[in-house]
Image 1: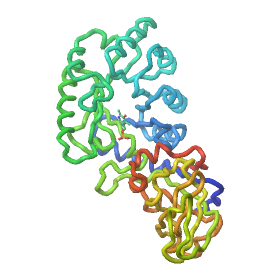
Image 2: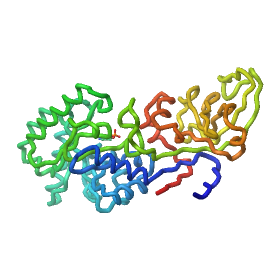
Image 3: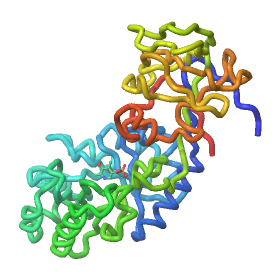
Image 4: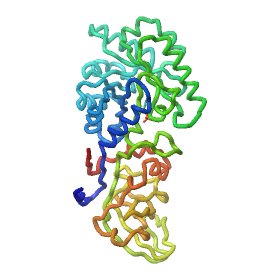
Length: 365
Ligand SMILES: *Cc1c(COP(=O)(O)O)cnc(C)c1O
């Protein structure tokens, strides 16, 4: 392997597209659904839709989900032939924009179904859409009684409904009775819509037999997140984040570091300053708990994460790994997304989708 180029100012985000492909294949096997889609909302969870989406298409993925129209347009550019569903439906009066880009809104209310059906009628061609059924989240979708009542209505055909969807409340929690309840409710709705495909499972749901349907909809696990918290992560890491060391200094016992002097050296310590901060999308809430790997050793943050800089206590790291321009790893080398999320008081999902625009981005395949 060639030596990586030295890290410049700011972090370097490396996205492993081969791992992304492998994760999609793995999830497709695990889901045991006739088809496995990919959720690529939020710029493919921060990994970059323009690179991630074609890689998944090449692997055989044919159906994709985004959240917004703008994401749908980016997805369409990357995927000229794919079926692309837009999870947040469509805003009033915007059906035309969806039709023009051949995007399929996920309809979540009777109003929305009626408006899409009307747009189909006006245009004289039926463009497909999905129907979201709320089986317990109380967030998006028509209620189960409404879905059952709608089943015989001609508006369903006029709206081109070709997919029934519901979303799980706590698929990552083992043996949660709510999941079984949702699966049962969804089954009742499916029975009322014969011949229409159905989709229930997200990443975690892919691992649950009760959530099998026609189409699996994983997101997080594709990008390396652990779909089964508390168990070994079966997914390959996709994202790696490194930052360069700007300076190394020695401090005496009692010295403080960072804004408001929140960190105090308990003895003589060695500190390294990294060229990366919360303006890069690395959460400031990691202050006091964050870590980075330097020379194979996990080093704790010292002081507040600031806008463009993080101070690390590198006293335990090998001396030869500490010089100007040397890398520190913030995600990778055993520091997985879920740990980074926990250290920031959040979940790995938020770390991924917050990955900054300021990083140098490197794609490997
Ligand atoms: C984001 C999302 C998914 C993907 O969920 P993951 O937990 O990331 O796998 C699936 N379905 C819906 C409706 C979503 O909003």
